[in-house]
Image (cartoon, rainbow, N blue to C red; front, side, top):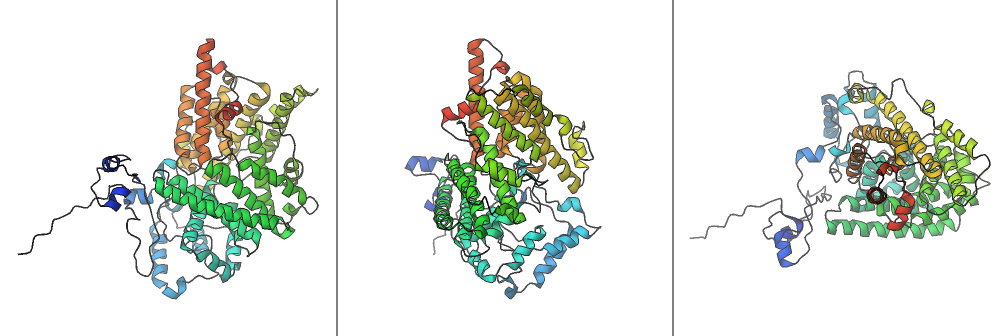
Length: 577
């Protein structure tokens, strides 16, 4: 008589190490009890997703964790019945041959784009716009890792679609040659790119201009940008998988490999420095800078700005940023990043080729600053305040100091706040926003972000020039943090770092600090390490201010703390983007 086979109850809550060792895990930790007992590394319980072979339906063992329905689709747009049925009908009509790469398929995501379907739906008055909103919602509703990849249609700009259609099959094949690279590139467009701009939409250059420039041709400059994009995306994935150290290290290793490849290609391209490769080189320098400061949290990101100055100077006569809309949007990203990041520089920097040449060259357009969510006049004022603060720090006091300060106060006055058809200070804001259509909501949020940037610039003026203690800017701090929380509840964690950080460093009220903690909790889940560094600096400022207030017998809101000095003591250099 055959011995009855022992029944084994399998669990999906075990850590990765115990699953590979095929031992029982108590689900505590990491580290769990069995891993701690046997002195092995506990790889934790983080979610790991891999690509399934489309032909066999198989995937490597122990590489895919189950995720319940609620967490898988949380924060994703809900499709109404009409659109869902249309997508099902289209899938039924697709044969295997039509799934081969072709110029009509968007090369910027792992799946096909259906702009015609989106436009048809947008023009259909019977479509329920609220149920198919592309708004990401509050960051609390997003999973800590991106949801599993799935076929979907995304609204794309006309320029984006034109570039996608014009790419040759050879270039698309280059992207499709590696499944891992395709996945990383897809993560960049669908997760990283929307976080790079406060209000995501058709004008988001990180979903169109940067990918299309990277895939434009096989030149060294385009290859450099391609690898830089993959590096930024892989670093972000490593940060999202930080709870699983083994997975995080693998992603970081991939990122470093592409980072090195980008530097090699960029070095080759800069030796030639042709005008037609300006876009790709400038975009690569920006992306590498973001990868260092935003994704890795490294202090080396300023080295790339040193290279940008010389690079911009080389093109003074040609002024390629005036050549096309793509050149302009890449150039304005460099100019914006430089001016904002220099506010955190502990050393006097003064004017540079980026300020003298690039900023003046690209700031004339009306929509300058849209990628960071600030207006042109506010950004110019922030730059002027920084230069004035550096002069004062060196003992150079201008004769017209009072007039300059009055000019800044007038430029940043609330009467200059951009507005729309509705009042930004409406009493029941949450209830009001629920009643707005998607288009009006985006307009409201655009104006809200412009205002919080302007208000933060006022705080910066009081910090850097007037040396006013937190008590003097209490109302301004409350305004920025309240606007920021409203924005994040509607659009997630893509809010610009600079205005919220500037306000947070002056927060002394318990209520204001609670809002800052909410912001930090949300921002820590999007895979951007500079948000974690920002939190570290803010908490040290609060601690030092409290300790000094106790020692001097004063209220904490009378203690002035220079956040740049605190940053220097911590040995970090925060990229404020």
